[in-house]
Image 1: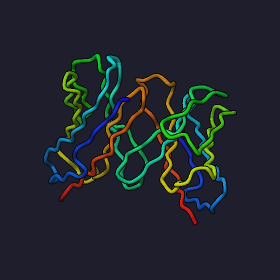
Image 2: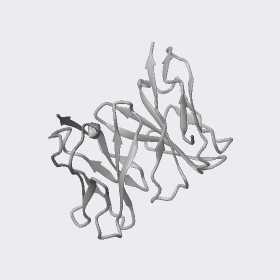
Image 3: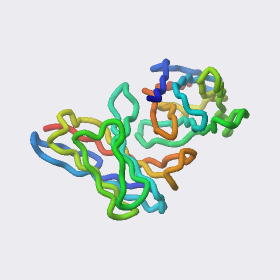
Image 4: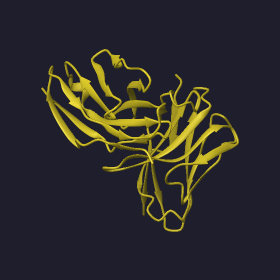
Length: 114
Length: 110
């Protein structure tokens, strides 16, 4: 079945440590997105990519980095510069980056600080 | 910047009855799309319905329909014949910026 796979489901970070969240899709979608979800705040866009080897910052990119070396993969690194990383992270993809395209979401990764 | 506001943090409906979830947004654009997504306890977001700003006709998907008032920048979701499986968080979203509201938690009472 086609879909988006996020791993791991739960992740713990120590102070000063970088961690990478995985996102893989087999939907042959061009565009991919990373969101952060905090209680009471809905989803906020971290980064998005409309094509391989290209990505743009969203509203809250500080302290995060991404890469898009393959069409099916869009990993997110939470760096030590992100002082409040505890949140639920959702990866999504869409056929293209066109505004009318709905997004398909993964099951999410919950990141916590040790 | 475009903002999306969901003024109802929680809503409750009796099974088989109808409920309406509110969403307002702020934009100066004329060409955009609006979406409603559902997030059940499993946490996976699922598309419920979408509306193109240029279309005056309200979108409908089975028991789900919207009331799109472009001048008022309002985009409410109506769920008819509510079912227990409709219980979830519902998010309104604006594209192309992909801005989401804070969500409305819907409880369905048997």
